[in-house]
Each structure stands twice: as structure tokens, then as C-alpha cells.
Length: 116
Image: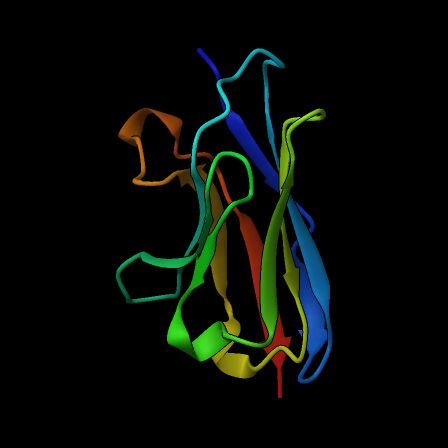
């Protein structure tokens, strides 16, 4: 069973930056459209950013536009989320998954906490 493993989260101050990484547990994982999602305490999980298979296009949640950048390295099969100018409202557990998501591939996520 392939798993998606997220890493790179942590505690940062407002205005800080983090880069999240998403790596499948098996290198032969298919190259598919991918997304980064987040779930804050007491809220539903939401799509933060998505990227097409070969990087032709990206989409972002309005509240992160201009601050977050999704990218991927298909040779290494890694998907990244560069997060700049972080705000307390970005505090959440961040997950990667297919876009649209496949319930079989939700991982443990990586926690991002932004202090004010």
C-alpha cells in the first residue's frame, strides 16, 4: 500500500516561511495531478493548492495567493509547498494527496503552527 509522507512542518512566527515536502513511499507512484490540503482545528479540510501532472498549471486558495507556491519534481516524485509570509490563520495540519483527492492516500500530515 503506497503512502504519501508529508514533512517540513513546524512552529514559526508570523511572517516566517516553511517548505513542505510530499514523498510517496514507493517511487513508482503514478504522476498525477496533486494537491496540498489543510485542516485547522474544528474546521473541514480544504484545498490549498493544486498542480497538474507536468506543471502546466497551478491553482491556489484565494487566501494564500501570492504567499504560497506549489511545485513538483517528477524525476524525484516530490511535491513541494513553499509558504512565505505565514499568518496565524495558516495554522493547520497540511496533507498532500491526488487532486481530486483519493481517500486511500491520506497520510498523517505535517503540522504547521504560526504564532502571532
